[in-house]
Image (cartoon, rainbow, N blue to C red; front, side):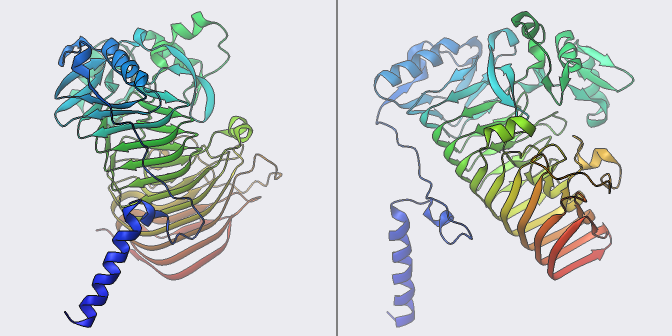
Length: 492
């Protein structure tokens, strides 16, 4: 054995030894910020099968009671693995408890019954605001050690809940939706699934109903209160691994105020026309890994949030210490996104080794006056993009609730220079480092559109190579450092 080979072998063995106790240590070492190690949740060595509790996987028998009984049985044993075998399992909401691993085997599909009456209205958070929604199909609150694992499918039956814009679907799809019932607004070319939905929308601002006082009023708009599909609130030691999460009523996966979160090897997808169909919204979480996963959604792909306006500032819990590594985003408004609900702050985020294929925007930072919050210490490296419809990179402090493509054809955001006083409602974006970026085709290279009273500050752009139809645009920003930044004007 030669000395060079022996040295390499020693190094390899040392690396294996270092990571043997915790394979996720590699993601939290050598970061440009301090981050605690993230580790797997631990479960007792108990196991039950869903079929032991009367469930039938034929897609028509309702299995809500069987899921609840299985989880209760495991809980009495101290927790463990709930095995969902091959089959199609129709159910209402599943509430996970501490020390429960919902293990969905290959060939298993959990699908949620399309009947809003089976989803209780609960206190929760949506679009960054404290509000009420229908209970999420899979949910947990204040739980420790919870997981969804396996190779199966979680399907939210989202088409029952969501509205549809005609411009986003084919003529055949539009005909199918409108012929199924519901209400069509011909002027807006917009379909909603029920009168209750239309009533709720009329009472809402950005999907959150206003000034509703009685339970009867809430119940009258229940269909409008479409839930996020997977909701974990204030949980610790959370893991999602291996499964397909698809067709959600609203956002797909929403960890909120959780700690020690691992999202690994999952596929998260929604139809491209899915309204508010974000793939992943990590909100006010601490110490999280998003690794080797794929996202294909009708809205933002991987999105970092921390509450909206006064509600978010009052919560005062930033989303912090997050690593995104080895992920792919297909269709969506943005590949990696911060905002627009970031009023509690976002800090210490690393994004590496990802690819965005056909998203509207590649790297998307968005906010507006009234939010407040500080976004800082973001490190993005090694991103490959192609066929980006609008901007490869955008910082837009005039976000108006629409996608970049919906604003207008070339993706130019509103430009304003009216100076306002700086106070707690002024959003701040600073100390963001972007390097080693290749974009083979975009509508525009970059957009930096800050507020005149609070310019986007301290952005580093290094080793950036973009082919785009339009050059970069900069407005109200300062201390932008560029090194080896190349923009080629043209189409791919």
